[in-house]
Length: 167
Image (cartoon, rainbow, N blue to C red; front, top):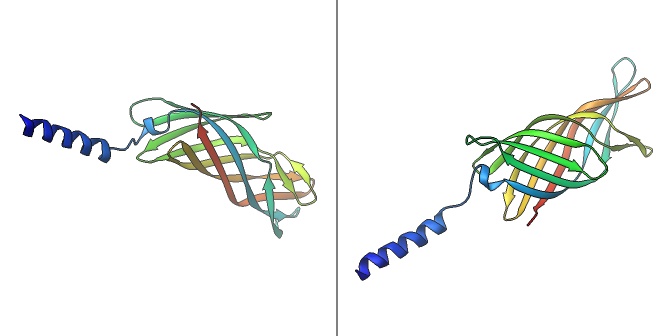
């Protein structure tokens, strides 16, 4: 009898240590987020020639993120409601320890050169990973903004979102 109890206890300990939450359940819930970063834009003249490449900073965003499960296959819906800003909705897929954000259009705020604040419409995608009660998402943006005869095309982005799970 003692041997059976011992084997059961050892088995339970091994199961609790070896199992880690993966997939949709790992990401579900309400989160408080902050997004910041920078992008690189190619400045094009009226005939489409690149005249320079410049770094631009994004205006930091904070708000609430909700991640809900759509089905058993790992499909998720993510809503990001920025304080004083827009709401962005992503179709996402949870697989293993990653949450992949599908393409979604959104407005963002960025500073161009001489502190000119612009609000281009961009397409964003991302990949997130959870560490304890923190979700880190690395976003990638594509798009452009036109000011007069000048086009600013996004050619690179370094944008991170850090979210803490609300309890």
